[in-house]
Length: 363
Image 1 (cartoon, rainbow, N blue to C red):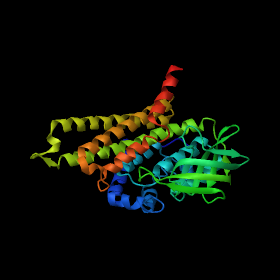
Image 2: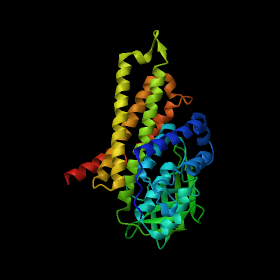
Image 3: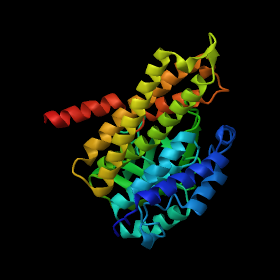
Image 4: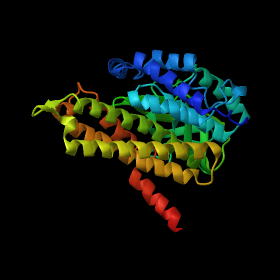
């Protein structure tokens, strides 16, 4: 596989600005709310523009497979911008599907899947959780057929292909399934966070294409997931802080803007510190994953814990500082609060990750 092209800081800033400009024009709160009420729950037009005009799906995909030949560092830049607007597009799902194919490193699978992902022609997601979470697959593989249920599958209702991690006699195996195949049933689920569409996917003796993959696929994919999700969480937390500052500098009480009260200043200073430390550990985790550092899994896990807790704390404070309007459907801050608590459960709850890290350190 070709090594990623080195991208300068200036080019990353240009990417950040391009995506941010597009989202400000095309993914305002009204557009987000309209998209989450559609079927499927995504903004198809925005996704098409992001793929065709900016090429976000192609960023970490090698040149020889129709990609930009960059890396997941650039994908994280995009995810941070999308996290700030809560745009309902399958960017995280696409990044994780790409990571799955790249980790598997099977020539036939990369030739078959990556060009369509890079162009945005095909939406691909990953299914690998059972009803209790991401510790074990909810699907079993036997004789090339899949049976069982995958839970918490992101963007499955819009996907054409699902990469399924399944339990088999020789451990976890990887399979490619067309969502239109016999025995596949995708059931969109109601969610606390309406901006993150989740589905249950049932398999009933479904024929699937097996993709050869290394034994550590699940661990490596989880490391990518923690790191990339943390970037999205940073964007959401930063935007929640911005909304709070805007509110407290315009809301007048007792003849003064409430943002001038010292107690509120202290709260927002703590929120700012949480956002900035999250940005630092997220960037470190993503870079470690991209360059293949030996401590990448620990850094990614730490980023998941810190960014999940910080995002939840920042949005919780934001709700309080907004007052009664903060819990109404009409105000956007409640959407960030829901995204924070929903994303903290993804790929492993923080307390589970801390327990796992502790075992690793003490072993």
